[in-house]
Image 1 (tube, helix red, strand yellow):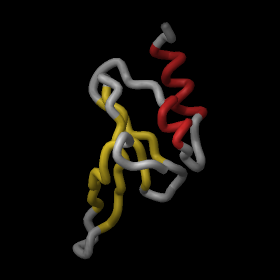
Image 2 (cartoon, rainbow, N blue to C red; image 1 turned 120 degrees about the horizontal axis):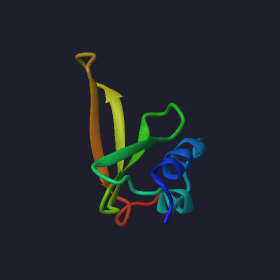
Image 3 (cartoon, helix red, strand yellow; image 1 turned 180 degrees about the vertical axis):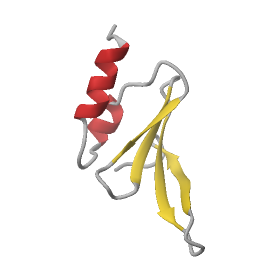
Image 4 (cartoon, one colour; image 1 turned 60 degrees about the vertical axis):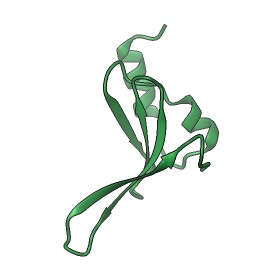
Length: 79
């Protein structure tokens, strides 16, 4: 099993455009959840410690506040 340091290094190395294979390979954190963002687009994948994955979108609403919305599970949606 990979160490926490090794998982953090893998998270940092994966960047740029997502593919379905990259999304499936994202390692789960040891606890809680982690979002990996796709470049600077506001599109990301949230991975929970249980291994669940969901696409998320961060955007600025009409009032100028940063807002985050879950698009859906990676089982239901593909990149």
